[in-house]
Amino acid sequence: MKFSLGPSLFFWPKHQVESFYQKAKDSKSDIIYLGETVCSKRRELRVKDWLNVAKELSQSNKQIVISTMTLLESPAEVQTMRKLCDNGDFLIEANDLSAVQIMQELKMPFVAGPAINCYNVSTLKVLLNQGMIRWVMPVELSGDWLKTLLIQAEQENVRHLFECEVFSWGYLPLAYSARCFTARSEDKPKDDCQYCCIKYPLGRKMNSREGERVFVLNGIQTMSGYQYNLINEIEQMNSLGVDIARISADSEIAFEKLIEFKKQLIEPSNLQLSKVEECNGYWHKIAGMSLA
Amino acid sequence: MELLCPAGNFPALKTAINNGADAVYIGMKDDTNARHFAGLNFNDGKLVKAADYVHLHNKKLHVAINTFAHPDGETRWRKAVDDAVAIGCDALIIADLGVLDYAANQYPEIERHVSVQASTTNIEAIKFFHNNFDVSRVVLPRVLSIQQVKQLAKNTPVPLEVFAFGSLCIMSEGRCYLSSYMTGESPNTAGACSPAKYVRWQETDKGLESRLNDVLIDRYQPEEKAGYPTLCKGRFEVDDNIYHALEEPTSLNTLELIPQLSQMGVVSVKIEGRQRSPAYVEQVTTTWRSALDCYQQKPENFQIESKWMDALGNLSEGEQTTLGAYHRKWQ
Image (cartoon, rainbow over all chains, first blue to last red; front, side):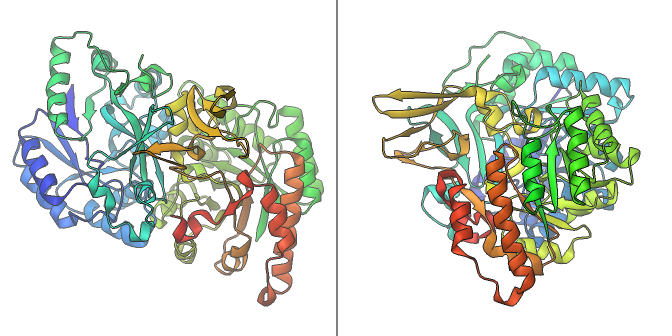
């Protein structure tokens, strides 16, 4: 089983991104995803900057993947994505069917990211026909769902055509809107957001009026209030044939998580998780915010 | 522009047709559609009756099969397609790529519309559906500004349908897991957002409280009007500020966009609300029919009548309406 470092979903200053990926080079990850997936207004790094970081990282012995935007609304956004897709060097993670369309035109393989709605084997087959070589399961699906789906992929003789990756640690990306909730929280219109989400390297916490952590606001994205943590499920994932576990790049803590997850695979133990910080409900087919 | 109205049951369907809908959309009585609510939707006999009534009046019937097929239940989604075709539906509204693939191969002659749940927001995504499934229409999610709709309309190889009125989903549809995060059930897999079985109301010292799977969504003072606890429309706390952090209880109303939508070539305006009563369907259909007819008769003189706005306002969540994402400032 391999471990990946997912793309950072937050908006960080350029120097922080660069220093993060300097450290990522020496991390325990086998695969590194990078790129802006949430908001096209976040331009601390432009296309060439991301590709430069990717080139720098490719000197390590890791596979480098460029992740692309999830909600694309304007021709300019699609144009920028096309440049990334056509980079010539790095594998692409498609987070919208527009990227799938472009990769198919370019006749290049791609990773179907967690925001592509692939819930069944028929959809997997459609995506395989387009050039998918790796499938990241939508975050709301369970271990049972995955198990059934992978068995069917075996039966249909397509399982060997793709790798399966599961989002295993970090704040979950849950929803995308036209509205920027961080700008709204500062009473700013989106068109004059002043890039305020850069002030919140881990997003803004949104609690119920009883203080229960409900969601994290991250620009136009809404995330889980708790960090998803499948460390106690990693063995099961391995036995189901999951090829890659994704550790999301929430912060530099992700590097420690990569070490912990790898260790857990070799020396499994039942780790105590925090009820007010962590969740694993989706995997267990209950409310995502619950801890089984 | 076609006026496409919702029907959660046969009386609503009749009402929509009798009051001027050009087409009606319905769903099956199971989790294959995104309004899988108790007591709603159509089963075998009612399906036939629905199709007969619509066709007798020379109108069109669209069937929404717009959730994502479960791996152990793909046959259920395929059967829904088979059944819809068997009763003579005019269009299938589909979100799942596997289901679309099945429909395109089995019934190439039946129109396929890309459901709003497929989150198709740009030209390349539209091309994807056009090239792979030869679709006849794309329903746009409620996340685009009117300028963005216009740009798409100019370049799209596939005709566009937009949401015109009703409950406002503020997230890109089909890409919102907030409901499953809180309850375990999502629109994508269970066909319902903030399902009623998880809702609890409680009078407390602090006010009337609404909860979803025990999470406090809102608390109302006696003078405030309480609304259904759709989780994105509650009041939450962000750094000591208590407010509608995501959205207020409000409905989408785009009457004033009729001229623009029509000029840009949008082929259909959709009314949301299969879960609503026949009375709602009657009022919205009547109002929109009048507005569309007025525009068609004298486009240059089109003006919004206050009685239309009043009628629609009364049917709206929190009795207020918005242009939503169509209006940049909302974003």
